[in-house]
Image (cartoon, rainbow, N blue to C red; front, side, top):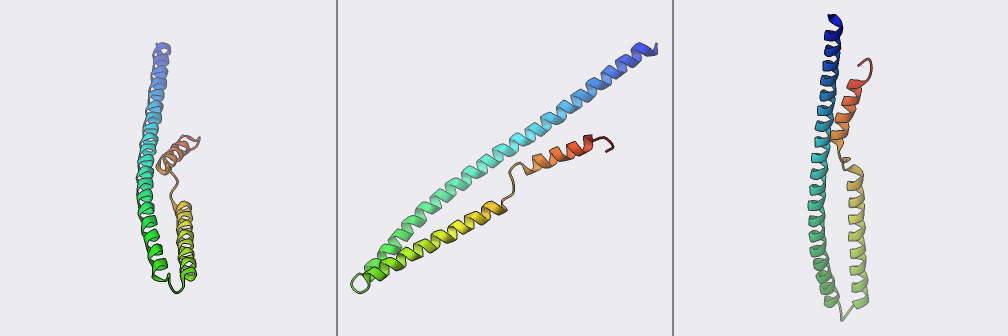
Amino acid sequence: MEGPAAGEGVAASLKSIGATLLDMAGTRAELALVEFREEGERRKRMLLLAAGAASFLAMALLFAGAFVVALFWDSHRLLAIAAVTLAYLAIAGAAAMRLSAMARTSPPPFEATLRTFAADRDLLKPGA
């Protein structure tokens, strides 16, 4: 009598293991999807804020430059234009360096998902 009962027990165990593995995979996929959506929303907000800030900064710099050039129009017009141009280049260089630093130090996307997958892989390794 042990033969059929043992066979049914093994089949039930395999089904249970398969169901558990599917549940784990589904949970991990949901986590990846949630992180993907969050990352997309965060990037959209950042892009909109950056575009708005850049637009208003450009307008402010344009008017500030026009003011400086108009102020020195009669005495040192070329020097004023050169100084405004160099100031704009310095601001652009500083912004580019800051953007580069942000890109280097930002956390990788899907960090939690990858960490969870690594923990699962370590758990399923033989001898763990």
